[in-house]
Image 1 (cartoon, rainbow, N blue to C red):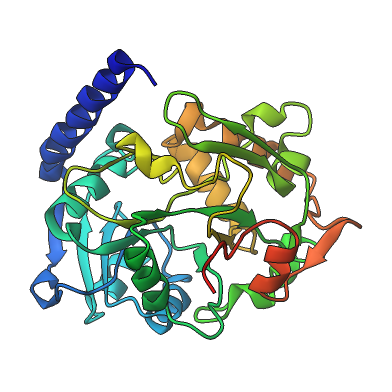
Image 2: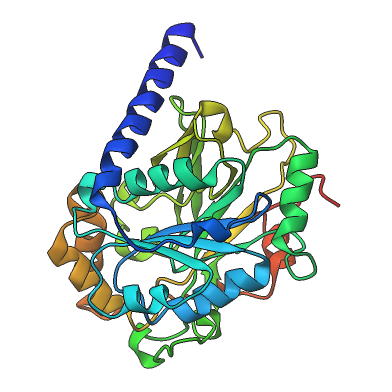
Length: 336
């Protein structure tokens, strides 16, 4: 990368940080318990709207992995999400009735909170339907991974988003609050992924899976990106650029080995496709607060009229992280 491009990215990062500082005015404090955060704590950051049915399992899952505190922005929920979160002793909550789209889809709000509270911490940025799987997660807590990353001088950890879905129609099995969503959505596409390098930011761009296969069969280039860098040893000078797909400084995006080897990586199991999906998709299409004029939700709405099945004869049933490593979807790298 040339000196001029490097300079331009540095200026862009400063603009995002200034923007985040300004956007802090859009946040109203609901419950600020950040004085309980200790220097070594592992933190989760998230933005959500109307996810109360998912929150019990989401919080419990990450508590069991070793997360110490959750910092969450509630974007004007009407289903009791804010009130539920306010009662949780390890959660700090902010609310905003401002535009999700004009906050760069929540990135500005979270960049501010990470700048203010995440500096020096390992920070995991996820949606309430995203569940991190990492090497040895069945026997080692998340802190074991972050300790190894610290010892290896690695500051960011990637995880591909893996869309999970049920066998049968989405509405056939109702999801209950507190239930493990992967008791229902236990299948995934083992292949059908395209990868290319983003020349500007240096990250990998991944597309494919059931969303490409079912919702964007004729225009796969419009399918949602599946590349994520959700776990970062945060510094107040860092900034997410587009969701958790990429960051600045640019070096944080190089979570792969360009010379043919493998770096450790994980998976975000994506529990989007439950019986709640149809209502959620219709709501988000009406709000028009998502990327690219909500093209993703337009595709969902059009396809859901036919009540499609995401399962196909090539679908794989999820077993554990080792299965995902064998399939080449994640790697333990040199972490033994």
